[in-house]
Image (cartoon, rainbow, N blue to C red; front, side):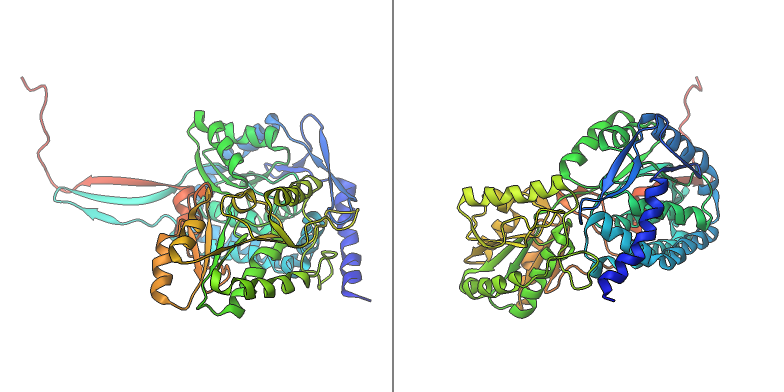
Length: 504
C-alpha cells in the first residue's frame, strides 16, 4: 500500500467524525451551535468535497464568548505561574499525541503538502512549551530607586483578548498567538478563518482535555464581517491579535477605535531575496526556490521577489527555470508532493488573475501561468521574468507559488528596488561580503532579515514587520509586551517634603 493511500485511509474516520457532528463553537467549556442555528459549509481544496457544516456565529455568540472569557479571567490571571506552566505543557503533550491527526486534517482542510504539515503540530507543541517555560518570568520587573522613592515595575495580563487567525498553516499560527496569551495570564476568544476551521476545533478540544478552566479559551467560528467584526468591537475584549491581509488589519483598527483596542498585526509581504554575484549561488538558488514554492507560496514571509545582480542574471535564471519545472504538484497527502492545491476557489481565482496581469504588463511567463486540472484548486508553479519594479506583479502580494524576477546593476539600485513596495515584513540577502551584508541589512526596510539563509525561526527573537506588514512583535518577551500591561508602584522611602497647599 502506498504512503498516499495509507494517509487517506487514516484520514477517513477523522473526517467522518467531523462530518457527522459538524464543527461547533466552544464557549465557557461547552460545545454549542450558533444561537440563531446558522451554519456554513467547508470543503476540501483537494477535490471540492464537503468536509463539514460549520457554526456560523454572529454578535450574540461573540458576546457569550467574551463574557465567558471575562468571567474566567480573574482566576486564570491569579493562578500561580508554575501551575499555568504545567497546564500549558500538558497541552503540548496532547498536541504531540494527536500530531498525525492534526497534520492529516490540516492537509485536507487547506491543501498544504504533508511533507510540511507533518511538522506543523510539533511546531505548535514547541510554541506551547516555549511560552509555558516563560510564564514564571512573565510578570518580572525591576526596581528603580530614587532619593525619595523605590519604584517597582512589573507586568500584569491585559485581560480577555481576541485572536483572529488565518487559513495558511492555521494550527501552527494559532498556537503562535494563543500560547503566549495564555502564558501571560490572559483569557482568549479565538475566531479562526472560515476557510480552515478544522484544526482550530482540534486545538480547542486539546486545551479543554488538558484541563484549562472553562472560559479560558473560547472558540467562535464565523465570517469576518459578522463574528470577526463583533469581536473587534466588543468592549470586554481588551486587545486583538490578528494575522492576515493588510486591508483587513486597517478595518480592524477602525472597528476597535471606539473601545481603544490594543492591536497586534502580522500582515502581508512582498519580500525580496537579493542575490549578489559573490554569493554562494547553489545555496542561494535552493533558498530562493524553497521560500516561495514551499507551503504553496501561501505564507507572509515567502520570498516572492527575486532580485539578481545583472552580471549573473542569465545563468541564475536558467538554473531557476530548470528547478521550477521539476517541482512536483499533486495530492497533499502524497509525501512526494511539493505543491498542493490552493486554499479555496476564490483564492485560486485571485492567484490566476495575475497571469493575465503579467501578460498585459509584458512580463515573460517562463514557467507555469495556468491552472492545473478542473477539480480542486491546483495551480502550476509559476515564474515571471523581465519584470520592472513598478509593475503590479512586483508590487502586489499574490500569495501563491509565483515568483517575480528582477535584475539590478549595483547595490544602490538593489536597495531601491527592495524597499520600493508598501510592505516590509522580511528580506533575504545573499553575499559573501560581510561589510555589505551589514550595510545593506541596516538600510533594508523590513522587520526581519536573513543573510545567507532561508527563513529559520528562533522563538526568542522578535517576529514582525514594518510599513503595511504589521504592528508589534511576536516571540520571546516581545509577545508579553502585547498581552500584558506595564505597571509602576512608587513607594516613598523617607519623609520627603510635600508641597503644601491651603495652609493660609
